[in-house]
Amino acid sequence: MIKNLMCSKNLLTRSAQVKDAAEIILIVKQVIAETSFFPRTADEFNFTVEQEEEYIKNAALFLLVEIEGTIVGSATLDRSSLSKLNHIATLGITILKAYCGLGIGNLLMKKVIEWAELNGVEKIDLEVFQDNAPAISLYKKFGFIEEGTKIKAIKTNAGYKDIVLMGRFLNS
Image (cartoon, rainbow, N blue to C red; front, side):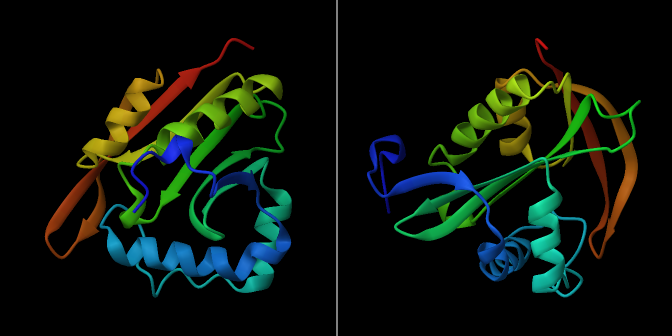
């Protein structure tokens, strides 16, 4: 395992490409299977390669983190095509469990915020499970604030989970 992630010569951040679609699908399914912090199960994540390719083409931003040539994480920003909502981008981050806690989330957040500021995004929104303390801590570290809660938004075999709505205004 890489101890000092930022010094690794084998770490690469780059934009997703259509050719990455099949690998991205596998990574997302693995992350869903590793964690309870997704609103769908791995079986319910049934994107085809063609659908993932379209998503890659249409996402405002789709960043990948590779270590030694393997995708280990990603961040996406989606913007509405509606003029009254286009100033806001919705953030999603996915990181394989084995690579959590190594600084990948920090790296992705820095790059996402930099891109958003350069591309006229005025606010970044996200939703996070209320019991996902590491993610909430990361978002707060980067200036996100809690804006509300969707009560009992997720129903699991173990009971209900709330979703925290968070946002960060940028200096656009």
